[in-house]
Image (tube, each protein chain N blue to C red):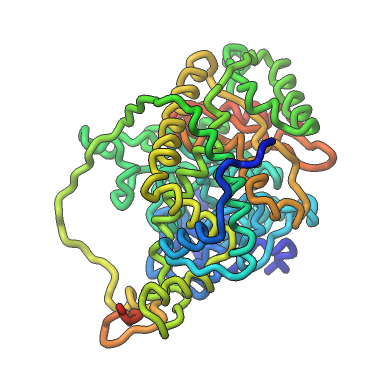
Amino acid sequence: MSTDEFDVFLTRVEIDGADDGPLAGKTVAVKDNISTDGVETTCGSAMLDGYEPPYDATVVSRVRDAGATVVGKTNMDEFGMGGTTETSAFGPTKNPVDPERVPGGSSGGSAAAVAAGEADLALGSDTGGSVRNPAAFCGVVGIKPTYGLVSRYGLVAYANSLEQIGPLASTVTEAATLLDVIAGPDERDATTRYDAAEGEPDDHPAETVSYADAAREGFDEDELAELTVGVPRELVEGAADPVRETFQSALDALGTRGVETVDVSLPSVEHAVQAYYVIAMSEASSNLARFDGVRYGEQGDREGNWNESFASAREAGFGSEVKRRILLGTYALSAGYHDEYYEKAQDARAWVKRDFDEALQTADVLATPTMPVLPPKRGESLDDPLQLYLMDANTVPVNLANLPAISVPAGRADGLPVGLQLVGPAFGEPLILRAASAVETVVD
Amino acid sequence: MSESPERVTTEDVEHVASLARVDLDESEAEAFPDQFADILDYFAALDEVPETESEPELVNVMRADETREGLTQEAALSNAPESEAGYFVGPRVS
């Protein structure tokens, strides 16, 4: 067993999978907010220190059935709330590309595990970019599937209407292979059964395509010449110079293969970060009410009444970012503020969706830098929460619109990885996987 | 930039914390009012968002109401800090 020099794991295990299957011989690291039967699942929080779920998440059963060996639970921002893996109650993870820098987050341990070779593949979860952000910062591939493609059963909920479990891997094809295994309907998550009312649950898109085949095939010369990539101005202008230059070089390289690039505009995205945080915090304030120190977690002071006991359990168990989000979510939903924040955020969400639909009428896929900045140094960005939220500008619109997106390495700037994000229409995973393979081919 | 019209007071934060049943430590109680003011000020731009019709593609999903195996009582209680005679032990109500 390796020394885990980048602190990617919270728990090391070796859970063997089935003898045979599409992932036979592969090792998989699992983010610590995805339930593993009898194996500690902390969500990076002191609140769940020692918590051992009595069941496996659907995605964990599926990777085991597919023959993979689960090798550990990976570090993360507490309950997924952060973009650097520094809000973990168990200390930060180092970026294997440059150990002084953050690996991104919140699935920072999963991305770093793949980048460092601690696991062949990893599972993360993406509520507002938490798979794509660390994939970009660590120089690996990460996929945020269309909402409803992958079961959330056994994922400890943060913001249910936004989040999906997604794969991380070194290559587009490997990530697609893991997506094939985890995607599909699950009777335990009704949002994966969107078409069940019309009859057959196996009409689910994942049942009729092979993502690995799409990634492996990519596009041939003729198809590339017919591909149109839309570039949303608003999501490029805000990026730091070295990021923008690397992104542009990758687009230019695609251009030499005949890919057409067009400018598109998404005026609504100016409000996406605001809408995302209002919705995510509101949902979090309700979801995290379950942590009261009675059924699991840290027991509160039992001197006072139940209100006092719960408040003390939650003071001891939650870190500052989690408290900040619960309180702001409670505020946004409270009488008198609901219309001003929550309702307006839902309007903005609908607007973002409409903008993406329109942009995807003129382009097959959209491309942006995944992150507007290069990975910061540890300790550099935690002081001002608002500045950290703004780092999510390019990833959160996709969650608001329920669309699929992939982050694929676009090259390096100042020796640090830059990710290129491709966004496609709902259940258009095969298309963005083919396009991502094309990027992989043209970028050394 | 002009000063935010509505500052957030310590009392405001304490009120929301009590609604959310979350005690704060000293440093949080000190830092949160200014941080919340900045964040809420930023959220206030949502006011410019036009009312937008959304047509969610939602359908009701029904299934037969059949019994199936669930967690055993022992498994359900296994993570409780305190249990007694098959029950969770909670704090007193008042």
